[in-house]
Image 1 (tube, rainbow, N blue to C red):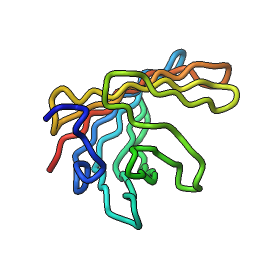
Image 2 (image 1 turned 180 degrees about the horizontal axis):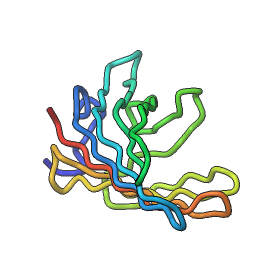
Image 3 (image 1 turned 30 degrees about the horizontal axis):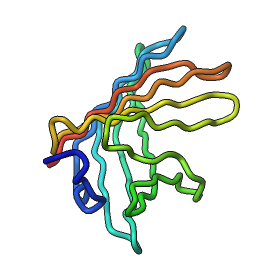
Image 4 (image 1 turned 90 degrees about the vertical axis):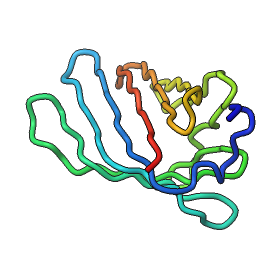
Length: 135
């Protein structure tokens, strides 16, 4: 599938999720779980649920939720804009005072895909790589 041809409905359904987080100056972490995109109104509700394991600590339950629109804009659960999913290799950015999030989606192995986030600022400094595999 060509990246430019991706549309919101292509994400519908259940996916395995694996996220590796490397934080500067603190322990690494791993999230393993599942994500589901479900139709809601003219968009889709994204919800992930799984276990977050921080190095040398007990696993924790973790979840998050977003809303995706047909133009692949992503909003936090409270309605604030997060970023746009760019399928052409350009980076997405999000500024969350005082930190900057820079994300890159890779759809080269569709229907498996990944997103990498580099977060930098005075409060947060980490890299995360999330891989999605359709179930």
